[in-house]
Amino acid sequence: MAVHDSEQAIFYRHVKPRSFTKLQKWLNIGQEGKYKKASKVVDDVLSEYICQKRKEVNKLNQQLVSKDGVDILTSYITEKESTGLKCDDKFLRDTALNMIIAATDTTSTALTWFTWLVSKHPIVENKIIEELESKIPIGETKWRRLFNVDEVKNLVYLHGALCEALRLYPPVPFNHKEPVKPDIVPSGHLVHPKTKILFCMYSMGRMKSIWGEDCYEFKPERWINERGEIKHEPSYKFLSFGAGPRICLGKETSFIQMKAVASALIYNDRIHVMEETPVVSAVSSVLHTENGLMTRISKRWE
Ligand code: HEM
Image 1 (cartoon, rainbow, N blue to C red):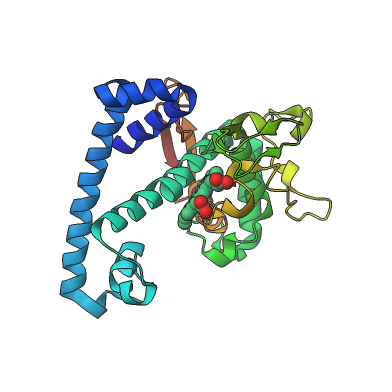
Image 2: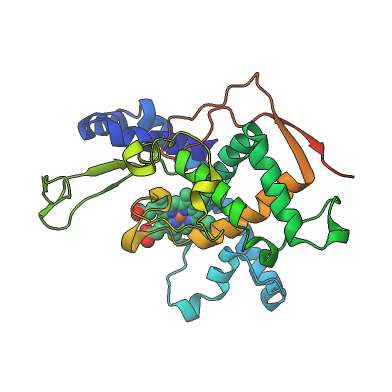
């Protein structure tokens, strides 16, 4: 909740004049007041967690390294000599928060919209199940199971369905950049350093000039070429992960994670979205659903 509150306040920083947010901050009111309170909650929770982690590392020392590796916080604490980083509590707290927002929140948001879209498109749901069944031995079909990295990494149709969800509902709905020196953007506008250029991935994903007349439709086929392979779109067109030198570092990782979760969910269970709770996007710098996603889940096979 506190993370969501701060993400909402960050949204308003992009649309309100800087003098307005500065005044709110000074008076500790409105969105900036909410942000301060939320940041304190997040900092306190993470500080407590880091303190416990340090104790755990000191106690267990080398035994922490299991065959599956270690979590990122443990590796920063134990590898500080080799990385040369000053891994003090503030660094660890900021790194953990970065991971929560950049990795966890974005991936879970993408999966929420994906689940909702698939539940509204039973034909897509069936095609995903067909693709999954084609990848597993006959004797293993029609039973509950999980899918490993090797099984999910080459799923073309599921990849297309996830890309469609990310195009229509990009978890980071807008971004901004500033030129380091005067430049002319493709529209012909001259931009100076400190000019904030806002661009909206949410709108770009719904522009006919970019995606064609059917841009509002959820069509995984859009991402599959004539040879039945994944059709790669330039990252400046499909901007959901950003583009250029600061492109998302976790793009490939997130696809593997989303495919593993989506395969398990869709293959094993039937998801029925409860119509009573409207599915609408939150006003926030991360495109959450305002009311979560209320579903009824039943087993597909025993
Ligand atoms: C569906 C999931 C994800 C989406 C939609 C997403 C989207 C983005 C976007 C839009 C940016 C900003 C790029 C820019 O400013 O041009 C970004 C940056 C970043 N992402 Fe992701 N991300 C996702 C998952 C992940 C995961 C799983 C990780 C880590 C394992 C991650 C780590 C990062 C990092 C470290 C940056 C900062 C890169 C930099 O500034 O150099 N992201 N991501």
